[in-house]
Length: 391
Image 1 (cartoon, rainbow, N blue to C red):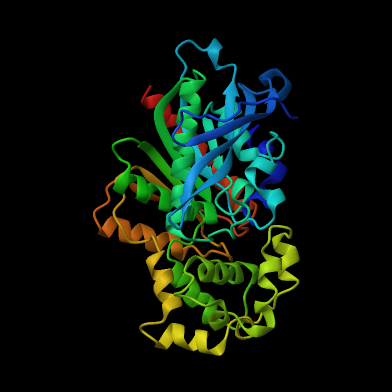
Image 2: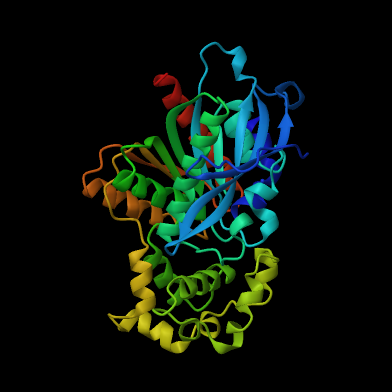
């Protein structure tokens, strides 16, 4: 059943979720702004243990020091009342790279279009928190801060806290157990979120386990590989990275110093949320020296003070000491995000003294589908075992 859900829409979700009435503004809440019921399907219809109920959650967060509203999808299992004493653990799952507004969780709220939310909720009985992430949904007027650790973590943590307020206001029996997962960019977001929680929220949020999957945790190393190669497999990724970094670090970075003039003017239109990855790639070059300026390519490798490199180093999260349980899932032949990213992070964590981190090697070579199908069932099973052991 879980594989059926994952197969439905995993390709569009990773590479890159009926309508109903809902609550209005939550004036007494610190994080929760509003909630709206989008989908309500019972378990008998789905032929699953639990039913599926999806809400759009609008919540308060910050971006570059400013207060903003963001959004995400909350999926709740229904029918758990028939299990005496059953309580809901929460899993915050971060989506992979998307470019189009139609690809975000709140735009894919049905069980069919949201296989991960359906898998975690209807089969395993988790409350599933799926942030749209800043730059999409309610915060769509901002260019998504792609692979930037602080806004990634803030969007996730603040939604978790908004969901806890929503649960309290609606007598939903969440038990305080929090799990983190995410794939590709979402794996990076998961790692950033865990690091931020352990360093600044450990007194209020208890992470039971984290499962980052198929992600580049060392952004500097990723850039070295891209800028040091003649061609790029997916030009929209590095172009989006450079563009979003130039906007986030406005005044420190300049897009025209990084991206060549032939493509610079098109970036605002390409990354305005209307196009998919495949559509964006047709407007870009696969030649690295045509997309990036010669000065930037040279400076990245020869200038110790190169500002672009400095910001990527700052946002790399592969060298710290996790305290929570963690399993890093990665395919051994992933051609888009090579296995060495997972190996490097794992080796650093162990060398730094982490005692509960594992590296789970999966055998696969398709980043967008095959590896996701392998990783998520393993993560769901692991989370379920931990949940049951702590009931």
